[in-house]
Image 1: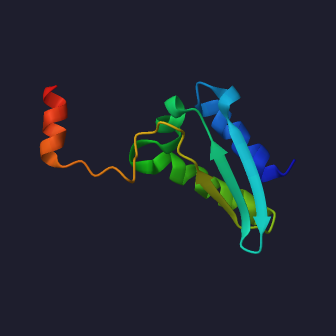
Image 2 (image 1 turned 90 degrees about the horizontal axis):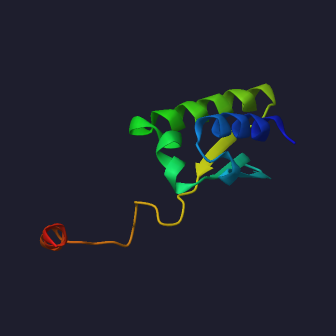
Length: 102
């Protein structure tokens, strides 16, 4: 197992409440190494952090690990099914107010 994947797995599993749900996929191409992270939806906030600061810190540490191994390492965090962000949702203000009243 590669050191960047091992490092990421160690850090993420230490932060989340459901370490068994952590899945990391590693892909290498001409751009470098891409680590894709899948976690339980309940743990998403812990990994992203306030204003994304935790995710930024993890990405910075991964770049340091990558520099040690002469590789560019990037992290992609997949949003779990049923996440809060919905790109296709276009609810008007009036519709949102009606939903809140119901």
